[in-house]
Length: 72
Image (cartoon, rainbow, N blue to C red):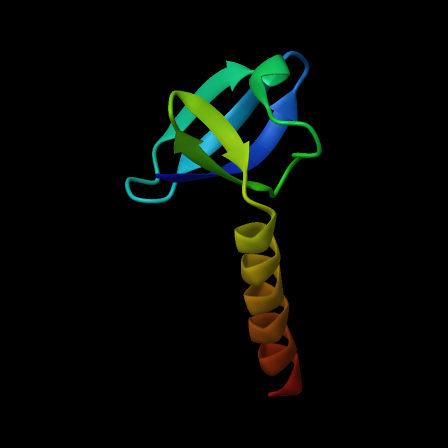
């Protein structure tokens, strides 16, 4: 299951689940090293894993959509 880090508020991180769009708060110290707002996490073996490849893929797709809208 994938989650995106929506925001970090003090000691809490707000995650949004891909499949349900529901939000969940977790302690920010549970975030993997290097992960921040906008990062994509995988829940695997009872831990969050920072999926760098998926994060970059989604960022590229977002910027491409934005570029196409700006060109209209």
